[in-house]
Amino acid sequence: MRAIGFYKPQPITSDEALVDLDLPMPEASGHDLLVEIKAVSVNPVDTKVRRNHTPAAGEARILGYDAAGVVKAVGPDVTLFKPGDEVYYAGAIGRPGTNAEYHLVDERIVGIKPKSLSFAEAAALPLTAITAYEALFDRLKVNDPVLGAERAILITGGAGGVGSIAIQLAKTLTDLKVIATASRPETADWAKSLGADHVIDHSKPLDQEYANLGIGAPAFIFSVTHSSQHRLAMAEIIAPMGRVCLIDDFPEGFDILAFKMKVVSLHWEFMFSRPMFQTPDMIEQHKLLTHVAELIDAGKIRTTLDTVLGPITAENLRKAHEIIESNRARGKIVLEGFAV
Image: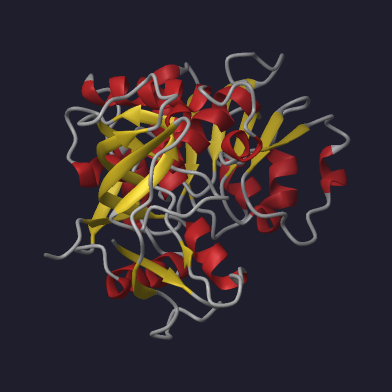
Protein backbone atom coordinates (compact mmCIF):
# COMPACT_ATOMS: atom_id res chain seq x y z
CA MET A 1 0.00 0.00 0.00
CA ARG A 2 1.06 3.59 -0.52
CA ALA A 3 2.05 5.72 2.48
CA ILE A 4 4.01 8.86 3.37
CA GLY A 5 6.60 9.03 6.14
CA PHE A 6 10.12 10.05 7.10
CA TYR A 7 13.38 8.37 8.14
CA LYS A 8 15.00 11.21 10.09
CA PRO A 9 14.05 14.72 11.27
CA GLN A 10 14.44 17.27 8.49
CA PRO A 11 13.35 20.89 7.93
CA ILE A 12 10.21 20.99 5.85
CA THR A 13 12.13 22.66 3.01
CA SER A 14 13.97 19.35 2.45
CA ASP A 15 12.55 16.92 -0.12
CA GLU A 16 13.37 14.17 2.41
CA ALA A 17 11.27 15.71 5.18
CA LEU A 18 8.37 13.52 3.99
CA VAL A 19 8.69 10.85 1.30
CA ASP A 20 6.38 8.47 -0.58
CA LEU A 21 6.60 4.82 0.57
CA ASP A 22 5.33 1.37 -0.39
CA LEU A 23 4.41 -0.72 2.70
CA PRO A 24 2.72 -4.08 3.42
CA MET A 25 -1.04 -4.12 4.02
CA PRO A 26 -1.85 -4.21 7.77
CA GLU A 27 -4.26 -6.81 9.22
CA ALA A 28 -6.98 -6.13 11.80
CA SER A 29 -6.89 -7.95 15.15
CA GLY A 30 -8.53 -7.46 18.56
CA HIS A 31 -10.60 -4.26 18.64
CA ASP A 32 -8.99 -2.89 15.46
CA LEU A 33 -10.70 -1.62 12.36
CA LEU A 34 -8.88 -1.69 9.04
CA VAL A 35 -9.89 1.58 7.40
CA GLU A 36 -9.44 2.55 3.77
CA ILE A 37 -8.35 6.19 4.07
CA LYS A 38 -10.29 8.69 1.98
CA ALA A 39 -9.05 11.99 3.49
CA VAL A 40 -6.65 13.20 6.18
CA SER A 41 -6.03 16.54 7.85
CA VAL A 42 -2.79 17.97 9.20
CA ASN A 43 -2.28 19.20 12.76
CA PRO A 44 0.56 20.93 14.64
CA VAL A 45 1.37 17.60 16.32
CA ASP A 46 2.35 16.20 12.89
CA THR A 47 5.00 18.89 12.48
CA LYS A 48 6.27 18.50 16.06
CA VAL A 49 6.78 14.75 15.67
CA ARG A 50 8.42 15.19 12.27
CA ARG A 51 10.90 17.73 13.66
CA ASN A 52 11.73 15.93 16.91
CA HIS A 53 11.35 12.16 16.47
CA THR A 54 14.12 9.93 15.11
CA PRO A 55 12.78 6.56 13.91
CA ALA A 56 14.78 3.38 14.47
CA ALA A 57 17.51 2.89 11.86
CA GLY A 58 16.06 1.93 8.50
CA GLU A 59 12.45 2.35 9.65
CA ALA A 60 10.05 5.03 8.47
CA ARG A 61 7.65 6.89 10.78
CA ILE A 62 4.17 7.34 9.32
CA LEU A 63 2.47 10.51 10.54
CA GLY A 64 -1.19 11.50 10.47
CA TYR A 65 -3.64 11.93 13.35
CA ASP A 66 -6.91 12.67 11.58
CA ALA A 67 -8.77 10.60 9.03
CA ALA A 68 -12.08 9.80 7.41
CA GLY A 69 -12.60 6.59 5.48
CA VAL A 70 -14.43 3.30 5.04
CA VAL A 71 -14.10 0.21 7.23
CA LYS A 72 -12.74 -2.65 5.09
CA ALA A 73 -12.23 -5.32 7.79
CA VAL A 74 -12.64 -5.73 11.55
CA GLY A 75 -10.82 -7.60 14.30
CA PRO A 76 -12.54 -10.47 16.17
CA ASP A 77 -13.37 -8.33 19.23
CA VAL A 78 -15.05 -5.47 17.32
CA THR A 79 -18.69 -4.79 18.24
CA LEU A 80 -19.30 -1.14 17.24
CA PHE A 81 -18.63 -1.22 13.48
CA LYS A 82 -18.85 -3.43 10.41
CA PRO A 83 -17.23 -3.40 6.95
CA GLY A 84 -18.70 -0.66 4.80
CA ASP A 85 -19.22 1.82 7.65
CA GLU A 86 -17.99 5.35 6.95
CA VAL A 87 -15.96 6.58 9.93
CA TYR A 88 -13.84 9.45 11.21
CA TYR A 89 -11.27 9.51 14.02
CA ALA A 90 -7.93 10.86 15.27
CA GLY A 91 -5.92 7.69 15.89
CA ALA A 92 -3.24 7.09 18.51
CA ILE A 93 0.18 8.67 18.82
CA GLY A 94 1.94 5.37 19.59
CA ARG A 95 0.82 3.63 16.38
CA PRO A 96 1.49 4.19 12.65
CA GLY A 97 -0.41 7.21 11.41
CA THR A 98 -3.16 7.86 8.91
CA ASN A 99 -1.01 9.03 5.99
CA ALA A 100 -1.48 5.68 4.27
CA GLU A 101 -3.98 3.95 2.00
CA TYR A 102 -5.04 1.61 4.83
CA HIS A 103 -4.86 2.17 8.58
CA LEU A 104 -5.51 0.25 11.80
CA VAL A 105 -7.38 1.99 14.63
CA ASP A 106 -9.09 0.85 17.83
CA GLU A 107 -12.87 1.01 17.44
CA ARG A 108 -13.25 2.68 20.85
CA ILE A 109 -11.78 5.96 19.56
CA VAL A 110 -13.73 6.01 16.27
CA GLY A 111 -17.05 7.63 15.35
CA ILE A 112 -19.48 7.16 12.46
CA LYS A 113 -18.77 9.94 9.94
CA PRO A 114 -21.34 12.75 9.90
CA LYS A 115 -23.74 11.84 7.12
CA SER A 116 -24.01 15.42 5.88
CA LEU A 117 -20.26 15.84 5.34
CA SER A 118 -17.87 14.73 2.64
CA PHE A 119 -14.82 12.71 3.66
CA ALA A 120 -12.67 15.84 3.38
CA GLU A 121 -15.02 17.89 5.56
CA ALA A 122 -15.16 15.11 8.15
CA ALA A 123 -11.39 14.58 8.24
CA ALA A 124 -10.95 18.16 9.43
CA LEU A 125 -12.76 17.47 12.70
CA PRO A 126 -11.69 14.55 14.93
CA LEU A 127 -8.46 15.61 16.68
CA THR A 128 -9.56 19.17 17.26
CA ALA A 129 -13.11 18.18 18.24
CA ILE A 130 -11.85 15.63 20.78
CA THR A 131 -9.34 18.15 22.16
CA ALA A 132 -11.89 20.94 22.48
CA TYR A 133 -14.66 18.71 23.86
CA GLU A 134 -12.39 17.13 26.50
CA ALA A 135 -10.93 20.52 27.43
CA LEU A 136 -14.34 22.12 27.92
CA PHE A 137 -16.21 19.34 29.68
CA ASP A 138 -13.61 16.99 31.22
CA ARG A 139 -10.88 19.46 32.22
CA LEU A 140 -12.49 22.90 32.67
CA LYS A 141 -15.88 21.42 33.64
CA VAL A 142 -17.55 24.50 32.21
CA ASN A 143 -21.02 23.43 33.37
CA ASP A 144 -19.79 23.68 36.98
CA PRO A 145 -20.00 27.44 37.78
CA VAL A 146 -17.24 29.48 39.39
CA LEU A 147 -18.92 31.62 42.06
CA GLY A 148 -18.63 35.35 41.40
CA ALA A 149 -17.13 34.90 37.93
CA GLU A 150 -18.57 35.99 34.62
CA ARG A 151 -20.16 33.07 32.79
CA ALA A 152 -17.59 33.50 30.06
CA ILE A 153 -14.65 31.70 28.46
CA LEU A 154 -11.62 33.23 26.77
CA ILE A 155 -10.30 31.04 23.93
CA THR A 156 -6.89 32.04 22.58
CA GLY A 157 -6.07 31.29 18.95
CA GLY A 158 -9.74 31.26 18.04
CA ALA A 159 -9.16 30.88 14.30
CA GLY A 160 -6.94 27.80 14.54
CA GLY A 161 -8.16 24.23 14.29
CA VAL A 162 -8.84 23.68 18.01
CA GLY A 163 -10.10 27.21 18.62
CA SER A 164 -12.49 26.98 15.67
CA ILE A 165 -14.32 23.95 17.07
CA ALA A 166 -14.05 25.09 20.71
CA ILE A 167 -15.94 28.30 19.89
CA GLN A 168 -18.75 26.31 18.29
CA LEU A 169 -19.03 23.71 21.06
CA ALA A 170 -19.05 26.40 23.76
CA LYS A 171 -21.77 28.37 21.98
CA THR A 172 -23.89 25.32 21.17
CA LEU A 173 -23.61 23.27 24.36
CA THR A 174 -23.24 25.92 27.09
CA ASP A 175 -24.58 29.31 28.15
CA LEU A 176 -21.08 30.82 28.20
CA LYS A 177 -20.20 34.14 26.63
CA VAL A 178 -17.36 33.32 24.23
CA ILE A 179 -14.40 35.68 23.78
CA ALA A 180 -11.88 34.53 21.19
CA THR A 181 -8.52 35.97 20.15
CA ALA A 182 -7.22 36.62 16.63
CA SER A 183 -4.74 39.07 15.17
CA ARG A 184 -5.76 39.60 11.54
CA PRO A 185 -9.02 40.83 10.00
CA GLU A 186 -9.62 37.55 8.17
CA THR A 187 -9.03 35.41 11.27
CA ALA A 188 -11.15 37.71 13.42
CA ASP A 189 -13.98 37.43 10.88
CA TRP A 190 -13.56 33.64 10.86
CA ALA A 191 -13.89 33.47 14.67
CA LYS A 192 -16.99 35.68 14.59
CA SER A 193 -18.56 33.54 11.87
CA LEU A 194 -18.19 30.51 14.16
CA GLY A 195 -20.13 32.24 16.93
CA ALA A 196 -17.63 34.17 19.06
CA ASP A 197 -19.42 36.97 20.93
CA HIS A 198 -16.27 39.10 20.98
CA VAL A 199 -12.85 38.87 19.32
CA ILE A 200 -9.78 40.56 20.80
CA ASP A 201 -6.29 40.97 19.34
CA HIS A 202 -3.67 38.63 20.83
CA SER A 203 -0.85 40.61 19.21
CA LYS A 204 -1.60 43.35 21.77
CA PRO A 205 -1.50 43.11 25.60
CA LEU A 206 -4.24 40.58 26.20
CA ASP A 207 -5.28 41.81 29.64
CA GLN A 208 -5.85 45.33 28.32
CA GLU A 209 -7.71 43.99 25.29
CA TYR A 210 -10.00 42.02 27.58
CA ALA A 211 -10.47 44.97 29.97
CA ASN A 212 -11.59 47.13 27.04
CA LEU A 213 -14.61 44.86 26.59
CA GLY A 214 -16.04 45.89 29.96
CA ILE A 215 -16.89 42.28 30.79
CA GLY A 216 -16.35 40.77 34.23
CA ALA A 217 -13.50 38.35 34.91
CA PRO A 218 -14.20 35.05 33.07
CA ALA A 219 -14.60 31.75 34.87
CA PHE A 220 -12.56 29.92 32.23
CA ILE A 221 -9.63 30.34 29.86
CA PHE A 222 -8.77 27.78 27.18
CA SER A 223 -5.20 28.60 26.17
CA VAL A 224 -4.71 26.94 22.81
CA THR A 225 -1.35 28.43 21.86
CA HIS A 226 1.48 30.74 23.01
CA SER A 227 0.65 30.18 26.69
CA SER A 228 4.02 31.49 27.88
CA GLN A 229 3.52 34.74 25.99
CA HIS A 230 0.09 35.28 27.58
CA ARG A 231 0.80 33.85 31.06
CA LEU A 232 0.78 37.07 33.06
CA ALA A 233 -2.15 38.48 31.09
CA MET A 234 -4.17 35.32 31.70
CA ALA A 235 -3.39 35.49 35.42
CA GLU A 236 -4.69 39.06 35.42
CA ILE A 237 -7.81 38.24 33.37
CA ILE A 238 -9.05 35.05 35.06
CA ALA A 239 -11.54 35.24 37.92
CA PRO A 240 -10.52 34.12 41.42
CA MET A 241 -10.88 30.33 41.64
CA GLY A 242 -11.28 30.17 37.88
CA ARG A 243 -9.94 27.38 35.68
CA VAL A 244 -7.35 27.48 32.91
CA CYS A 245 -6.67 24.68 30.41
CA LEU A 246 -3.47 24.47 28.34
CA ILE A 247 -2.67 22.30 25.32
CA ASP A 248 0.81 23.63 24.47
CA ASP A 249 3.85 21.46 24.96
CA PHE A 250 5.15 22.57 28.35
CA PRO A 251 5.74 26.27 27.68
CA GLU A 252 9.32 27.31 28.42
CA GLY A 253 9.43 29.53 31.47
CA PHE A 254 5.75 28.99 32.28
CA ASP A 255 5.78 30.02 35.94
CA ILE A 256 2.49 28.94 37.52
CA LEU A 257 3.03 31.11 40.62
CA ALA A 258 1.30 33.97 38.80
CA PHE A 259 -1.98 32.08 39.34
CA LYS A 260 -1.47 31.32 43.05
CA MET A 261 -3.07 34.41 44.58
CA LYS A 262 -6.36 33.71 42.80
CA VAL A 263 -6.24 29.97 43.60
CA VAL A 264 -6.63 29.26 39.90
CA SER A 265 -6.61 25.60 38.85
CA LEU A 266 -4.51 24.66 35.83
CA HIS A 267 -5.35 21.68 33.62
CA TRP A 268 -3.62 19.96 30.72
CA GLU A 269 -5.53 18.51 27.79
CA PHE A 270 -3.88 15.83 25.63
CA MET A 271 -6.41 13.91 23.58
CA PHE A 272 -4.02 11.00 22.98
CA SER A 273 -3.90 10.07 26.68
CA ARG A 274 -6.91 7.75 26.62
CA PRO A 275 -5.66 5.50 23.76
CA MET A 276 -2.03 5.80 24.86
CA PHE A 277 -2.76 4.43 28.34
CA GLN A 278 -5.77 2.29 27.35
CA THR A 279 -7.80 4.00 30.07
CA PRO A 280 -11.03 2.36 31.29
CA ASP A 281 -13.03 5.26 29.82
CA MET A 282 -11.37 5.11 26.41
CA ILE A 283 -14.76 4.60 24.74
CA GLU A 284 -15.69 8.18 25.74
CA GLN A 285 -13.90 9.31 22.56
CA HIS A 286 -16.25 7.14 20.49
CA LYS A 287 -19.19 8.68 22.35
CA LEU A 288 -18.07 12.29 21.92
CA LEU A 289 -17.32 11.82 18.20
CA THR A 290 -20.83 10.38 17.88
CA HIS A 291 -22.20 13.47 19.64
CA VAL A 292 -20.20 15.81 17.39
CA ALA A 293 -21.55 13.99 14.30
CA GLU A 294 -25.10 14.47 15.61
CA LEU A 295 -24.46 18.19 16.11
CA ILE A 296 -23.05 18.48 12.58
CA ASP A 297 -25.95 16.63 10.99
CA ALA A 298 -28.44 18.75 12.96
CA GLY A 299 -26.81 21.91 11.57
CA LYS A 300 -25.75 23.15 15.00
CA ILE A 301 -22.01 23.23 14.28
CA ARG A 302 -20.01 23.03 11.07
CA THR A 303 -16.76 21.63 9.77
CA THR A 304 -13.65 23.74 10.26
CA LEU A 305 -12.18 22.75 6.88
CA ASP A 306 -10.55 25.73 5.19
CA THR A 307 -8.20 24.34 2.52
CA VAL A 308 -7.95 21.12 0.45
CA LEU A 309 -4.45 20.85 -1.00
CA GLY A 310 -5.14 17.91 -3.31
CA PRO A 311 -4.39 14.18 -3.11
CA ILE A 312 -2.42 12.52 -0.32
CA THR A 313 1.21 12.74 -1.50
CA ALA A 314 4.53 13.58 0.11
CA GLU A 315 4.68 16.83 -1.87
CA ASN A 316 1.26 18.00 -0.71
CA LEU A 317 1.92 16.97 2.89
CA ARG A 318 5.14 19.00 2.85
CA LYS A 319 3.08 22.02 1.70
CA ALA A 320 0.61 21.46 4.54
CA HIS A 321 3.40 21.18 7.14
CA GLU A 322 4.93 24.39 5.82
CA ILE A 323 1.64 26.25 6.27
CA ILE A 324 1.19 24.88 9.80
CA GLU A 325 4.73 25.90 10.75
CA SER A 326 4.08 29.45 9.51
CA ASN A 327 1.56 29.87 12.39
CA ARG A 328 -0.80 31.55 9.94
CA ALA A 329 -3.19 28.69 9.24
CA ARG A 330 -6.93 29.31 9.51
CA GLY A 331 -9.18 26.36 10.21
CA LYS A 332 -7.98 22.96 8.96
CA ILE A 333 -5.89 21.81 6.00
CA VAL A 334 -7.03 18.55 4.36
CA LEU A 335 -5.67 16.19 1.73
CA GLU A 336 -8.16 13.97 -0.08
CA GLY A 337 -7.60 10.59 -1.75
CA PHE A 338 -4.56 8.99 -3.31
CA ALA A 339 -3.70 9.84 -6.90
CA VAL A 340 -4.81 7.15 -9.37
